[in-house]
Length: 129
Image (tube, rainbow, N blue to C red; front, side, top):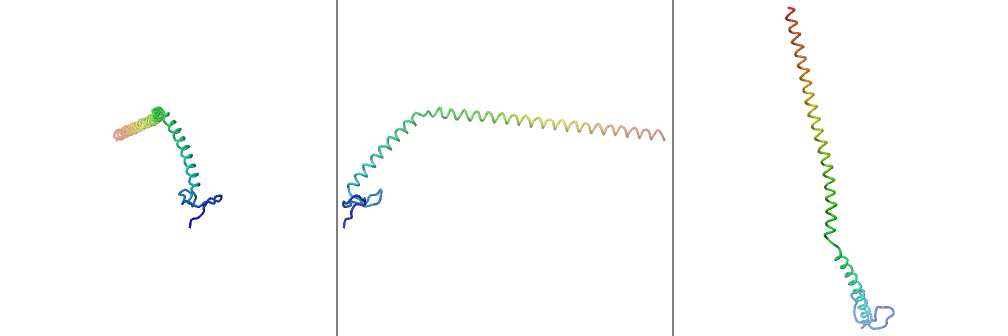
């Protein structure tokens, strides 16, 4: 037995199940629904065309160039930081070498002085005997 249209204000017999709202509706509702969908599709197509026009106006070379400039600037700044750090570490290493050399030289001078003193003491002991 055919049922009536699921739209509350409609008393027509249903023509079938609407895939969109999952209700049994009449052919009038189907037509209204199709017209509504078609108008929405046209609006969507217009929006897509507008978006496509905007995308076509974008110059990818400008965007890529701008990104590349930013990356080049970043690289240059990083290289400056690395160069400063490198120079700092070179100076620290050089200072350590100089300090070790001077310490070694001082120790050798102290040992030479001590050895000379011991030799003088030995000579003095031999002279006293």
